[in-house]
Image (tube, rainbow, N blue to C red; front, side, top):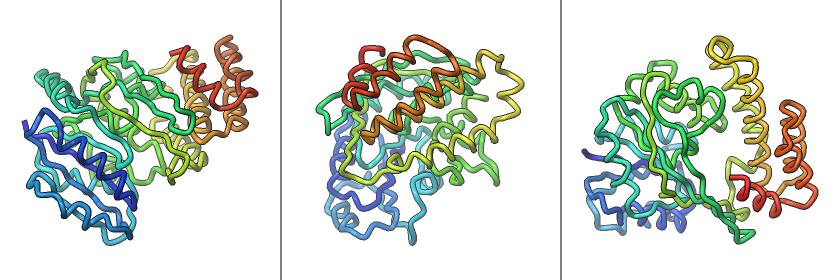
Length: 305
């Protein structure tokens, strides 16, 4: 099967080259790579045009449309039966596509994700996420984003088509962040999910570059949108205990974003909210660890995982 790889980018030509090379060096070669340049003002276009590889297709947005809409443009222009996404500041291991494609032999699978190596360059620390959820997982996905960010996921085109409509086309671009979580929820309602346990993605956190995650308010607003959009099924399918788990997961997520930008004081606020919800000793320990700084919390999260 042809696999389309969509890479949205904006003014990160040097990082983009590393991301693109990690795709072109895949052991699975039946691919097309769509670079969606979101109105960059650096030399991105010339950097891409230097490649002599007919698998690369370059498109430039006339204005800055942001990542969600850029991915939607890529999906509309794609030809693959399977679609994968890569951010311009992350890289793949060279057998990622090959290992994920194999799991799509099951025609009921809509998403295949994988483990991720999270790399905190400022602290010279890293740890691996470990997937543990597969099958019919809609209810679990309403509680927490067990799949993760876009670079770890490969999606069946048919699944994307099945959940899209005029008001809700693929990624919901009204979200300031977390639009991938919303998409995974909608797909998992109709399709099964599977995973490759290995960490096949290197996801970097660099304080020296601009990211959506530098503004925690984007994530708070996104969570409010998620709550409103999926309110009916959350109330219908989740127990009182599961709704509390969902609140804890949201606060843990916000705390993690604060840690990624080295704001341990803000993380402390969200961990405290989580502790007040579930009163678990693990949450209390992480909350207290905030007084020791972001680096210590990253180490603690590694050991808890």
